[in-house]
Image 1 (cartoon, rainbow, N blue to C red):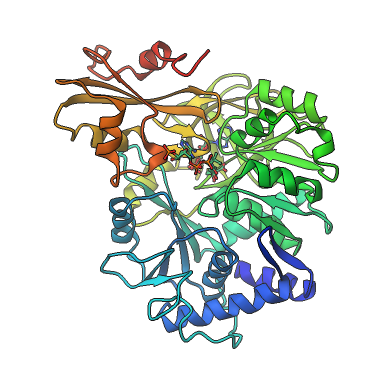
Image 2 (image 1 turned 30 degrees about the vertical axis):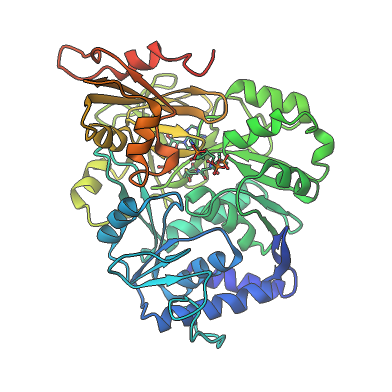
Length: 489
Ligand code: MCA
Ligand code: AMP
């Protein structure tokens, strides 16, 4: 079934109830959201978008952007959102890879594909000639594509994870049940909507029950504190919680209606969990997911939420900790986290070899995360087999940064690592061997316009040589240990 058909039925019953609540403008009711989705669907048709066509989207977080996402689902188009921080060369890669019928951008963009501007007027406006005549929601089979989410890549190039209507709907229903979504819930939404966390996990829970979403353009601590009193659920990356704790005025009185603080996308440390409980009385519920699999495990709504663990397999999801051959290990041992279930993606867009590599013969997907499971089935993530830095919930692939650094004339070689950082959890650090002095400012200048800002190293360290093992491979663990206190103990 088309997941939008489910939302549409809920939206129709909700009628004039608030859908999107914005601090700086009039609320959108569910009736208004339905109308805007129809308008956006009509606009997609004007722009020539048909069933199965990719729509690449790089726009700010606005109610119009939400309606565009829903319209893509409604029309059977494949929604491909990308980070607004990406630079032109990064965007060119996604255009070449997913071959969109239409690229919807926040502002003008110089490229060969058809570009519509979401928040502008004139000939390039996405909304030109669109009408609000309702069109029928296109039927979709369970394994038809709903979205492509670009992610990871040990090679440094992103791969598109193909997510189906059934992936999205089954996971949304599972989460609604697991987290006991209520008819009177009010979600405070301050995450970006180009990743699974903000786009699917957060919005879908609210949409399945047609409950209000307080839509913040971005994470702004002052705005968040203002809106917290009327929210019942907040979903965030760990940085949200450390920043809330940095606010002296923040305590239980700041969130009188709250019932659930949820954290994910990066490890929530035990000290943050404990400090949050001490300050507010709330035990943050941590869950674990991936772009390829949506949500896999969650600490319980009722029952013990254990700091440092990501809880139990969600209903219908099989999780195992296995050796390198895919054999399940005894409880308590550390191994590869592997999963299977209706949440697991269809494969990597136009990458059959990479898709085949990622799955075991029995259908389990190898996540690249390392973990251990206790006797009760509670999962703890202990590290990553993949070379990946997670900074403030954003993934940074060291290879991508290293490849660019190595293009600098004075750089002989580089190693990019993640080291502990109070605000971002991990911060990107570049360790370089260089023929001439190379400093932070020089690196920033070189990377400007080539690499999104959040991927830039927050520290550049020049060394005589990189540590290598007997095979000649750079020992990143040695570097991580050497610079563990780079941003303070
Ligand atoms: C911003 N900057 C960052 C980051 N964000 N640097 C490193 N890591 C970051 N995450 C840099 C900017 O480039 C800029 O640098 C400076 O910080 C200020 O930028 P600003 O936009 O004002 O930052 P911010 O508003 O403070 O953003 C921090 C943030 C944001 C709120 C933590 O990064 C964020 O919303 N993260 C959530 C990401 C997310 O949704 N992840 C889920 C994906 P300069 O000043 O030098 O120019 S993972 C997922 O979906 C899976 C399935 C899952 O399990 O959930
Ligand atoms: P992405 O591929 O961008 O969706 O990022 C998914 C990765 O984020 C996972 O493979 C994990 O490494 C990490 N991740 C997500 N949630 C958690 C969590 N609660 N604790 C630790 N790591 C997490």
